[in-house]
Amino acid sequence: MSIPTEPIGSLPRPPELLAAFAEHDEGHLDAAELARVQGDAVADTIARLEQLGSPVLVDGDQAKRSSLTYPLTGLAALDANGAVIPFADGHIRQLPVLTGGPFRYQVRADTYLRAARTHTELPVKQAVVAPSALSLLYPAGGIDGYSRAAFLNDLADEAEAEIRGCLDAGAHRVQLDFTEGRLSLKLDPSGALLDDFVALNNKVLGRFTADDQARIGVHTDPGADQDSAHSLDVDYAGLLPKLFQLTVGNFYLQLAGEPDRERVLKVVADHLRPGVRVFVGVIDPIDPRVETPEEVRDRVLEAARHLPVDQLGTCDDAGFAPFADDTSTSRDTAFAKIGARVRGTELAAQVLGL
Image 1 (cartoon, rainbow, N blue to C red):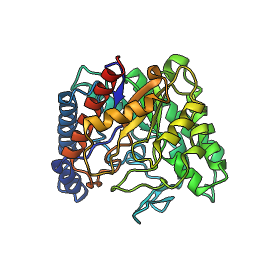
Image 2 (image 1 turned 90 degrees about the vertical axis):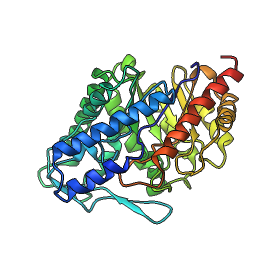
Image 3 (image 1 turned 45 degrees about the vertical axis):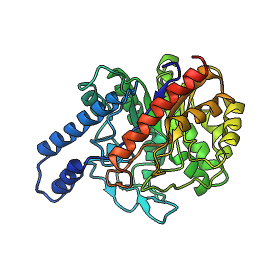
């Protein structure tokens, strides 16, 4: 395919896996049996993506409870009452807060990647949480004996190690999930928080070579959880110029769900630098309707009127279930939408003579 197309990451978990999570939490299922069910879900995800003709695969986050907090699994120095993320429909997600240091990842994403690659010969990408998101774990009141500066240095080291581990494990790309970017402008309209996020992420990204950075990307969206967003009302034009300061080779942009896609594309075109690729979202995960391949084709052609085709790719706007308990979209619907993206991107390439 001459226009690259990639999934973003998470997919709805099958009922068997959701039941296994619940049984494990209740003490009725041991860790080994849970791991077996998770492995079956990963294998099924890989197989279904291959059947759809997806040229790049993901494990669908089947072994993660949350795409945001998976590195914290088993970390003792946490309190549940951290930062709150409010969504437009009224539901919230709440981060934990760190109570002591030093900070260390308990789980790194290369473990998921290595497991997924045992099921396929096709390229597999790996999504990781951006260090900027985990920076929100540090409490406003500080931690005795563990300064914020020390925490941020530890966090940068841990994030670097995770990304490097995924690259070494053969990731097609490593994708930093940066949903907090747009949200930061809602929390702090001055843009100072966003500047801090970009600086922290670039502190990590700057440790990689240009060849490594070509295999790293950043994904941004206004949230996609339980068919609701947290920052769709924030003007994209406030985020994009700073987003493109991140030193990566690939950008994955939510676009299908935007009310004025042409305006967003013009902003992207104004800030696009040579040598990077922009994957535009052509599928809206929080819209229950399955897009047609022809609809996807037209969205790709719309983007091609503003962006060089050799710097263009397609993706879904976001993952379909960043939290395991999100059952707002069925597994079959998610795969149908992905199939439409793959076929629609192919149709657009044909129209463009590629």
